[in-house]
Image 1 (cartoon, rainbow, N blue to C red):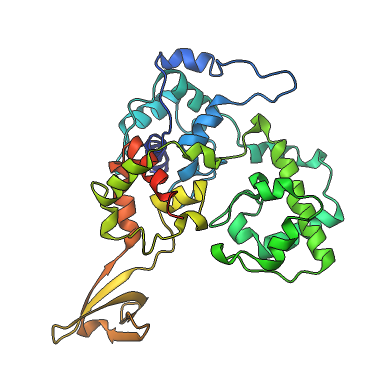
Image 2: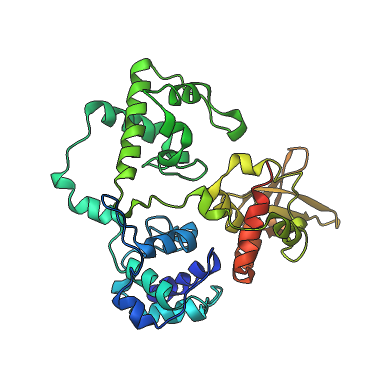
Length: 361
């Protein structure tokens, strides 16, 4: 059932906790979920539930509760499908592969439940869109250019995507004046992160810079002054302990090498993107071992498979294929091992492992 699936995934929030929990009865926290020091005059109030969500849940369910299907369903509107008691029960006990998190109690649990009961920022924006001023022609042009060339990595709103960082929090972008920092990077690219250079015209470049700055401005006005998960949010572990876990109990070294496939990974991915890569990597090629009628085994990267044919590329890059009726084959999906590891992690395991990966530059 959809309700059960969504509810079960809520428990994953507990897997990626990064700070301690407070005690106290849940009903008291729900009555006053924002019991903290009032903000300074002129400063936007930060929803403590949003901060808890950003640190504990956003890596799986998205910074705006949009989810990441088919792995993690959206949590927007979950309070309309489940009561606070049902959410709390599933957070504590877990369901299926999803672990329970019984230590999330009291004030923090109430604050998280209160946050989940509010509408996501995007919904509020859409509701009042009719009264907002339209972007200038230059910004609109830059938006179209950005969506066509940059959104795949940096997200359509420039707040981070599949492999690119959140530009609204980029130190380079924040220091930019009229394109003096952004333009050289766009023109030359960044080979170390596989970002290509773009040969845009002066007018196109100006529109792109204008759009990026418009996103920075929009992010700064984000309700609660919380624009997602910062790199600092995820720098709480012990790198030495993480290295021990990588080479020992975690079993990571069975498939990965700090000097091989993971060398320089901290230069290619930072913050949330790195943690997502660690927890549930996407688009990872599967391995296949084909056993021929003679008994010979051929191993390589799965290149093609249907009910009639199985094909691979061997270590030399040569494509080879066989009729499935004549051979036996076994496919290994590397991402499956990461999925199986999710319920085995403790809080410290995740943060220590993350700290270790951040040293691999």
